[in-house]
Image (cartoon, rainbow, N blue to C red):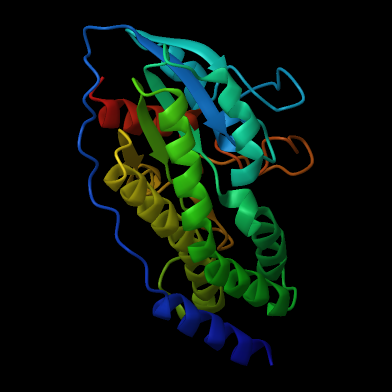
Length: 279
């Protein structure tokens, strides 16, 4: 039974149709002006895992918003992001942006698809659990991804309406797991990794589609793809295979940072966002 499920999982991963994210064009914000910056979104936007939590929203001094604030000519006015935020739950954060805001970053969508549930279900498979729940969670997330395009497009439009002078950068999500070596004994893990990362790709494709739709509607918005920046730094599930993950991997000693980017991971986000902004 387990072998059949893993084969189905591998077939699912190979059959996922995702729009490839092309390189982002640098945004039009002038590097000579000081950006008045507001961060919006979920736990990734809040910086959870980037250091000690500063509040109940798990904001940290190591997240990409804080690191951008340390960059020249970028002034973080407010980090309104909060762990657990969905697309709908991000709308109340918009009270923090206004006509004076010139840069907005947004990371959101993972909680709408329940990616944390996928991680939990599939991590147990790596330890020998039955993969049925993992397979079902991946399939549900991929099926739900297209449904996020409309709500996210509306959210981006609302940001643009409240801050018409802002350049908006919407980030995607990094691949959590690193592919194991192509050996027969790791075939099951390879299928699991492909499935989980495929669900992330489905979400990233939906985010990119929403950015494109909002841009077509007149929003000054750009997509920031972080997948390539994390290449080689995902969590390695294969026993004995060394890795340098940019995600927290200790669910006991560091539960808040577990499977969230570390400071190094948020630095990768920061660099991609700066490149997108042309700063």
